[in-house]
Length: 563
Image (tube, rainbow, N blue to C red):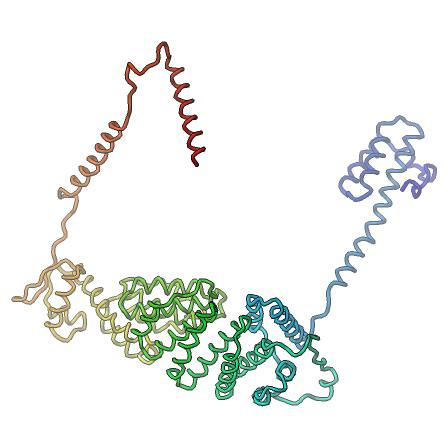
């Protein structure tokens, strides 16, 4: 740097700068910083302390020149940073390019997993299906099937025939711009995992396009072929294939025919210690039983099986939903509500993901909470994505909350088709007694004496005899505190008296005082006082405390040795 500095004479009037100028130079250099900061500050300080001679002028010259070099070098650096930022911004890639890169990456992952025998890596490939099924193109899918399925396989032609075709033919310009389909160069023949990967992607595309017949045929062929292989790296594909096979059977309305196949597959998964397969197949079996209202068989299956610990979170959320549904039908409302709330918490929290699952769980949780005697929070009905679908359940909740039996019957008949579709009509019919209990509580608070005929008219019951039976059950259950006069046909509410005018507060206070006195007596008995004969000869109180302290430390040391 000194070689680039101007001479003292070339600075002109600045050569005789005063101490004030030097101070300004120091402040400016400290604010600016940078690589030349130390040089500027050092020379300016020297110039400030030196006398008025040539050395002072030279120091000031060096400081000012260094400041000039800093100012000159600052601008190009900013331009260089801007250029680098502009260079980093690359144009977005074509969707076709991204699709081919994703498929190539998954093929490499499968190749490495098969070589190492690591089935855990396959979970990464399964998670990639979520984006692949949305972005896959017909020609890319067909090329993938051609590449990965062995030519000797008899089902290759059938898979290619099922593959969807482009909606509209491409123009000449689009063909010129089209990126050539290239897959990674991996050793051939490909492992069977590659074929499972491509065929499962084809099956997902057919499911998304609602091509039920092709999906049914494809899933059957895939499961039949997978059963001929016993490889741990195929477990993840096997579980997903059974899931879509069950869905295809459900679409055809022949779900009960698949039950023996699922039971055999679950037994095989248990023998192979396939955690993902066990979780998936157990949920499929529970869904199969519940689809035909076979709650006893479903409960026996749950009692005799154990859900695997190494479970996917989505499968465990499904399992909790099915358990909650079974418990609700079996009148175990507390357990059912606990399982359903767990399922809702474990569901994906993104507002647009798994809406069907969250909707089913919320509907069942609302009904179960009403059966428990509670009222669901308003926030449960105001969720933006679920608000419209939960409107029938909000109307039922309002009727139960108001204790209006007529309104409850009206809303039940209005939305009966919805409740049948959701399979909650049986549970909602059980809410009738809850509506009556709410109405009876209001009547009991409002009237000291009321006839059974008036109760029947207020609650919407058919006759006074029905009202008498309902009221009698409510009195036995402890819902209301009243007595029934059958001769005069009226209900008399028991007059509530002021608790503080009775002896109950005195009894409660006496109980607490007795507890405190007993605790004091026990504490006094536990205290130990040293006898006069135990004192050491000539030992003062201070010395005794020190001795006891040493003894306690020795006891602690012995305890540590024992540990």
